[in-house]
Every structure is written in C-alpha cells, then in structure tokens.
Length: 225
Ligand code: DX5
Ligand code: ZN
Image 1: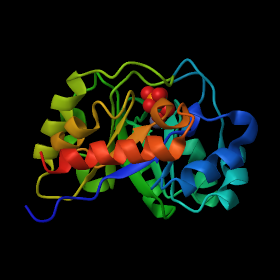
Image 2 (image 1 turned 90 degrees about the vertical axis):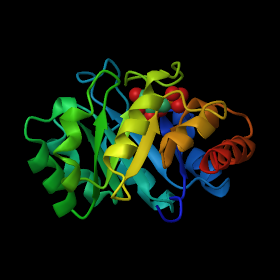
Image 3 (image 1 turned 90 degrees about the horizontal axis):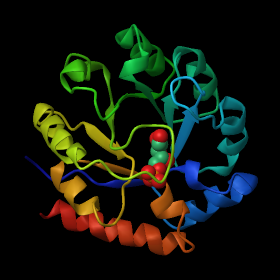
C-alpha cells in the first residue's frame, strides 16, 4: 500500500438550523469542512422528509466546498439531472432503492457527477461487490437512515474493514454516515473509512470549528493506528 488516503470531514446539513441555511453552510465552511453532506429524504424510502433540488439549487452559490447528496428516496433517477444542474459533486443512491443499479450509476456519471452506492446496516456487502467498477465511493450507513442523532451501530466497523479489504487494489472512497463522533472516528479510519459524515457531532455543537478540529484530530490518530 502507498500513502494512506486523506480523510475528509463532511458535516451533514440535517442537523443545521433550517431557518438560516446559508449562514450554517458558511459556518462549517470557514471551520474547515471538506464536503457538505445533503440528506434528501422523500417520506417513502425513509419515514422523514427533508429538502430537494430547489433548496440545493438555492444553497449552491453559497457553497464553495463540494456538495455530497445522499438520496434516501424510492426513485433516485428522478432527481439526478436536477441535482447535477444544482452543481452537486457527488450523488449516493441506496442499493435497496435501485432496480437497475448500473443504469442509475451510469446516469449519475453521465451527468458529470461522482456516483456512490449507499447501503443500509442490514444490507450485505455481497450485494454491491459486482457494482464496484461503476462507483466512485461507497457510503456505509452506521445507523438506519432517516434521522440524525441516532446511536452508532458498532457492527459497522467490521463491515467497513471487510469493504476496504474487498477494494484494497482500488483507492475507493469509503464514507461512513450515522452516529460518527470523536469517540469512534479513529476506529472508523483505522478500519478503512476515508470520509466521515457527521450531523449532530458538528452542527449540534455550539463551536463548529472546535467540533471539526476535534473530529479531525481523532480521525488522524486512526490513520496511524
Ligand atoms: C441519516 C443521515 C445522516 C445524518 C447523520 O439518515 O443520512 O447523514 O445526518 O446524523 P448524525 O451524525 O447525527 O448521526
Ligand atoms: Zn446522510
């Protein structure tokens, strides 16, 4: 193996104050966030509703870091073009929602956007193995999707480790989403995660710069573990 991959931190807007989104984005951006994670929920795939392409389009000019869209919707294909037009850099679709996964991933890449597969905690890695040639990243859910502030499922660590082994020959970005905190960041990075998505641990903190710095320090100690 060569140099360890850089770990990126992606605050999840789900835990931000929705009445002042542009200010919230500016806050984590100036605090050193690497990506902005956008949880798009439709009330069908998950029992919660958030926001869709019109709000992403409005935020886009206020966001200078790459936007990372996480589609928790039953029909992700419908949103791909609008999100690409809103200039998101990455789109993850849930494997559980896609009848024709390869086609959906191709549609995302054709729109000039990095394509990712998201998997629920109970979904087996075997289901995505054959799709790896068509993805730029995998998003491993470490809680059941739908809400921020849930407890991290510790089984996710072994899953990330197995996924990293499965992809050892490729520099695949493995993102982890749900219950990420300074307590588990080092173990997640040591297991092979390269993007840490965190909602309540960052937006839930009064001092976002401190929260990001703490998370980054914890993540770095995982690189050398
Ligand atoms: C949950 C979302 C997550 C959520 C994480 O369905 O996909 O991105 O914001 O929130 P925390 O970090 O609070 O678990
Ligand atoms: Zn998410």
